[in-house]
Amino acid sequence: MNAQENPQKPVPVQPLPSLDRLAFALGHPARWKILKELSLGEPRMVRELAKVAGCSPDMASKHLAVLRKAGAVVQGRGRLYQIPAQHLAAPGERIVDYGHCLLRLDVAG
Image 1 (cartoon, rainbow, N blue to C red):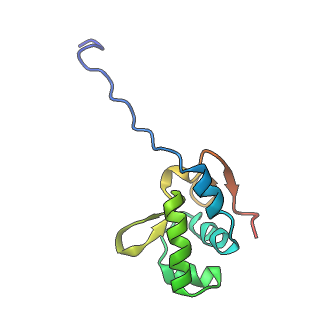
Image 2 (cartoon, rainbow, N blue to C red; image 1 turned 180 degrees about the vertical axis):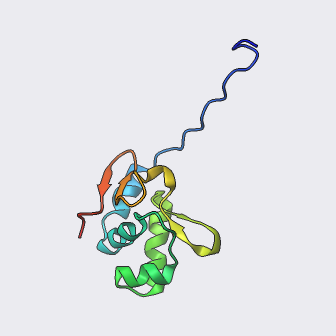
């Protein structure tokens, strides 16, 4: 078999989150706290993230909607939120790489 008979399929490339939306989403302290919690790599429920962010579940849902529209988080099964795996540097490290910027959430307040 030669390369022409069995060409390799290209690996799909995930688009980067919108820079404008991402910059806007990062502009609120509660959203930083949510991202810091999610940067551990474990999916979390809205109530858990609300507690971490110091706001009501309603307000946390609104913050998560902004982060979701920016492409910073995704909503999975059971209404669990997480940072897409391709943006996490390594398990246990609070570093998120969105392509446009690298967030070190281990030092963020």
